[in-house]
Image (cartoon, rainbow, N blue to C red):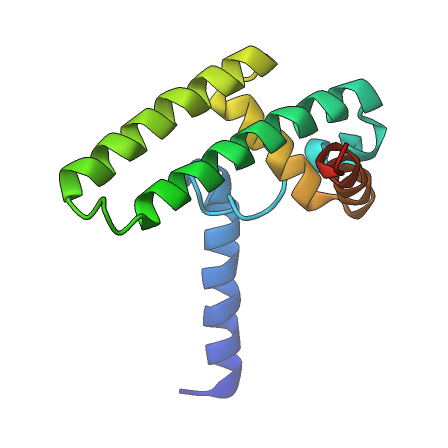
Length: 133
């Protein structure tokens, strides 16, 4: 194959994939939404603090779940399944108490991970919330 024809075939393939990208779900899912990245720095402090508090409560639940799963006295798969089901219910309650759905919580998580400045603010809040009192 002639090098010029290889490049033109490759260019055609790229053009077809990119032009059909809006119609193929998940093809560009790894890319952060432009609005989320653009708006991430202007989120209000109260909203970020509310998210951080829910995040801390869910992290505490997750730590407790992992400790229970690691307990050598709880070896049976049925016990592990029960622990995981209980954690899922408690997580849902914690999200609802904080005013979040799974999707909204995931969106906040994505926004924080996509913005260096927002992540720095979030980590500062976590440090303050996790500090011994």
